[in-house]
Image (cartoon, rainbow, N blue to C red; front, side, top):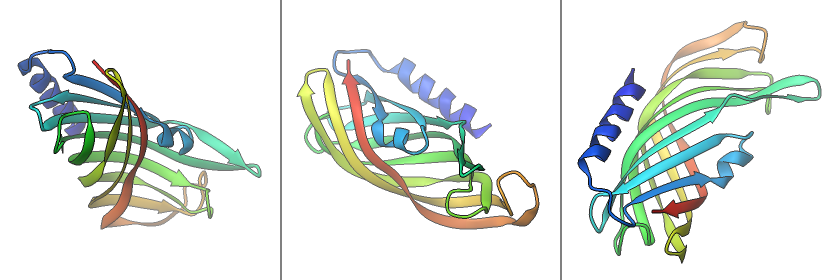
Length: 184
């Protein structure tokens, strides 16, 4: 429900803005693909010389096997936020923040314990955008996020034996960013 509201708000925002040259960008984070093949895309629109609005979506529906045991880092992520650019949008240093929702199932990686649940929170990030040509950038950056997590812990990835459940606050790394960006 919250994800539909975020997407609707971003869609309305996009309709209100004019589509001028160098005002839109789409990117994909190459580091996320190393996280068990997490598919990802982020769209951005320039709001002014120093501000851009962003929307991100990530999906990892995959399960793997390690020594015959199931391993997963499955997730669905939706987020929306803004970036501040001291010099100019899509070039140089930036700092950002975003609201984010994550549905996750992670287990079998270091131990048989498996956690699944829903997280909602706010993230802070920063980085640099290297302009390769007028339409291609490479972004590097890092981020953290914190918020509220409603979780269930299971004894193993497939047994369904509940070991614990509850609500808790969290602070976690959010992004390690090495992204290809197309600006149009």
